[in-house]
Image 1 (cartoon, one colour):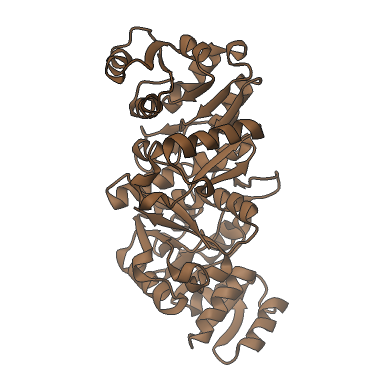
Image 2 (image 1 turned 180 degrees about the vertical axis):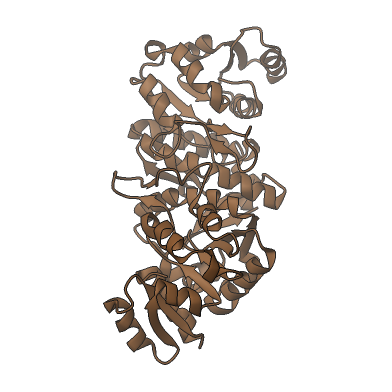
Amino acid sequence: MGTGVVGESIASALVADENYVMMGSRAANNDKSKTWSKNAGRYASTGTFTDAAIFGDIIFVCLSGEYALDVVKHLGDDITRNKIIVDVTNPLDFTKGMPPRILENLGNSNSLGEEIQRLLPHAYVVKTLNTVNYKLMVDAHLVNDGDHNLFVCGNNVDAKNKVMHLLVDNFHWRSDSVIDLGGIEMSRCVEAIVPFWVAVYQKLGTPLFNFKIVQ
Amino acid sequence: MGTGVVGESIASALVADENYVMMGSRAANNDKSKTWSKNAGRYASTGTFTDAAIFGDIIFVCLSGEYALDVVKHLGDDITRNKIIVDVTNPLDFTKGMPPRILENLGNSNSLGEEIQRLLPHAYVVKTLNTVNYKLMVDAHLVNDGDHNLFVCGNNVDAKNKVMHLLVDNFHWRSDSVIDLGGIEMSRCVEAIVPFWVAVYQKLGTPLFNFKIVQ
């Protein structure tokens, strides 16, 4: 779900490993998704958000924070029942200057991850990948030989395990680098660090960095 | 300012390096500060918050988030004029379960660091140390041989430089580990990551860890 750099990066990485990927967008004949699909080869296809949600076993939500809930609400609980939703989206508002803010009513005691789980109560929402740059999401080796951390949260342990395997097998994350923080309410914590990520990005001048927990 | 573990840890570390430290508390004859002072030797003394603010060139605010602004308001701008205020405090609310929340009106588009600067416009507020455990604050070597990061923000460059020297000289932080994120509004970012810090603490089972930025 989503044709931006995040959606394209994830879709391309999965297609490269010979997974079938349908890139979902608002309109089925979206130019960006059509171009992507043409270049990505036979494992790639395109469709509406609904088409993609029906197609996939694992649905990556790669939308801008302000539209994500509208799209998810439109999908509805029926077609996402028992599916894994990987929520990569950050509820950021860049319109009021730096540092960016969390969108109203989506911070502190709430989060986008929780709202998506609330809208799709029979799906298994897993929040992850939202704390790193889109290039790093799909190739953890781009930074410090892959030695840095990623966080996962969600209410369903099996779903989290499947996503963690995907992160290791397809996106080259070290299995001991991926930290399970708990239930989907921990989305609050991993979404709240993204304005800090932006501040560090501004300071370093490159988005190719990450946080490593050291003891 | 403050007789909790954070205030005591910072006061003891500074006294150990032969700096004169007055520990400030609400009542001058606070038992905890008297006991600390007796054990800490001739560089240590105690007083009210106001006594301590008049005494010090550098004032460490080590209060609980919910009381910090009351204390600072009571001090007022006059006695803190041209002084450096190191704000170590986190505006956290643990009363509503985990993860902790940021206190109302002190998150997202605001922060405790900014509120303190607003209340004391002629002081130089520097936000730092709030992202690590109190033991690590004063001895960076306790974790990963000191190889991890600390963040500083504030509006006055000279004040930030003085604080960064103190961190290096007294608290054993590596000078290239301390990252200046910009003006005091960046307190929003470093305060917002503390619920995440708490989540990682719960996961690891030890507060002796920190974040290292890797590229």
